[in-house]
Length: 385
Ligand code: GDP
Ligand code: MN
Image (cartoon, rainbow, N blue to C red; front, side, top):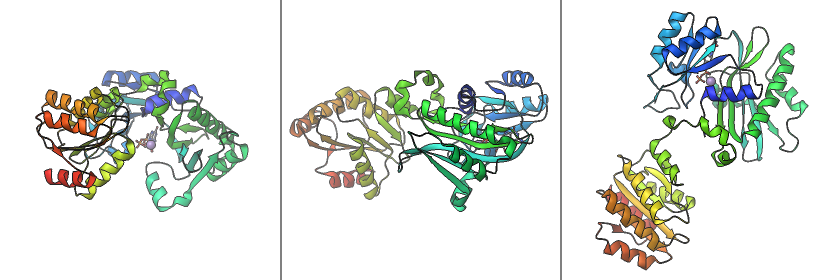
């Protein structure tokens, strides 16, 4: 689960990770109220969306005066902010973070994420922080320091030393820096994060370290034990179809192609997407109804896929194991009758009660194309498109 910068900074404050003073604002008036509370200029006005690269896209601006703060708030609120992470359609800005402007001496990069290969949290850091960290990683990977934290031992002092040395943290700031890294690691583990990123982590002219930006992703699989964090979820930032699918425990990911597909099991879903591509078509989604789906769930799956206007044909690929083919077929018929499918549908079904399933589909009067196997299904869907 992604959260906003202002929420991530609220979490940082709870763990004593230093951040600039500031507050979220939903209108020009609120933005000015926050600026007044901060009691001085410049202030920074920052678009709050679930995507990075805001600075380059014009979503982060320094306001030298109250008047300018008002103008900038007007300009950013309601804008469609396009960054390298939003895609060309951009994101509508509905919230701002207004913060006390900082005097930056140096911009550093610091992040923590789960390294699957070593099954450890890896701390990544670089002296080359700021807006071009992707280029640093691509062109000069040796400038990125990586420290692997043993989950039983936690962060060791020598590792903090290595980080401080690698980032050239000046002596007066080292203690504060070490404390920040420790606290950040505590936050990461306690909240089941999958990513915490501070870019930039700044050194101020008076040798303070401060998280100027904050990105926190929480492992969605762990949300059941972080009910308090659920209030941070912002449905405005999520794909409406994915939100709808999550209500029914369907694993759904929206993609760019035009072949909708419904599959039971993640592995089969991946294989089905591959075979759609191999046949020269493009999948519009990943939809795994799971091993033990009910007819209702199948109905919801089909309904959600048909909500998507770019879907021009649907491939249903079911291996009936725990989910019996007859149950599945009932779901398809239910859904088709309610939604009125008016695009080609190809069904490939195999496994438990396959004959009963096929009979239900055949007797339904629906215009479905059946496929004998996966290859046949892919060829038929490509032809339909
Ligand atoms: P991002 O572009 O989405 O990653 O947004 P950031 O929060 O990282 O802001 C982008 C850039 O704005 C930073 O790299 C800084 O250079 C600049 N910036 C943000 N806050 C301040 C501030 O308080 N003072 C100054 N001088 N620059 C700031
Ligand atoms: Mn940033």
